[in-house]
Length: 153
Image 1 (cartoon, rainbow, N blue to C red):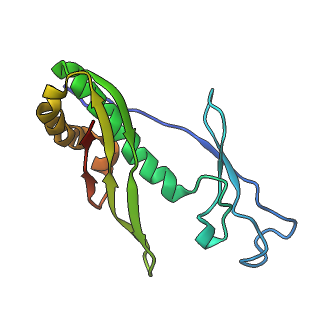
Image 2: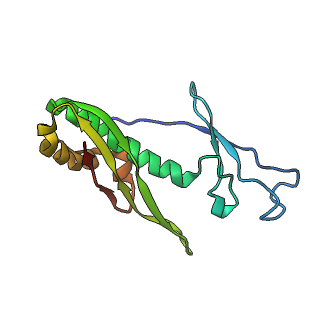
């Protein structure tokens, strides 16, 4: 069976020109707006450490959110297939990035808190996190570890 291909498209518009463009590193804002057809815009900036607006999403947060959301979607799918009923799922994911000549993320740790309808399913539910990680398109695209430390309540 041939692999199915998917195509994604976004529109990113920089809105940080204060009048002098990029005449100097401090002459412009890092603000932009991310759009995709039929979806509300997402206001973006840089991390405040890089002169960004702390009230807007930054690329590092979006990378972390993408990894967490992809894992969650695969995990819920696998639980449904296994007959494990998840009633609540939230994640307080964290990521580590280092600056340098080639700044990069070094790790992400997902920290999902999950409520199961039947607490007796916890061992089977815990095992499905490994399968979710193996299936996650985002995790498979990254060149650093994505760890998962689930908690059941």
